[in-house]
Image (tube, rainbow, N blue to C red; front, side, top):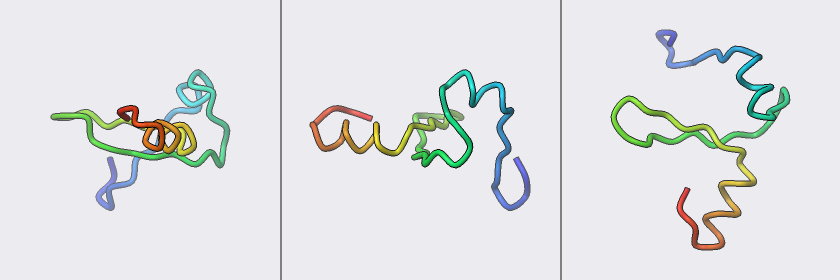
Length: 53
């Protein structure tokens, strides 16, 4: 992690997750030392339908 808080992810991880460059993501903490990235549309759909993130 850089001093400004930015993080660079390896392209292989993004491809494996089915994410293309420019994908809109939601980031949130899921506990001590864990950060989750989700497609923005998937996360919003879950929230609007009463499902947990």
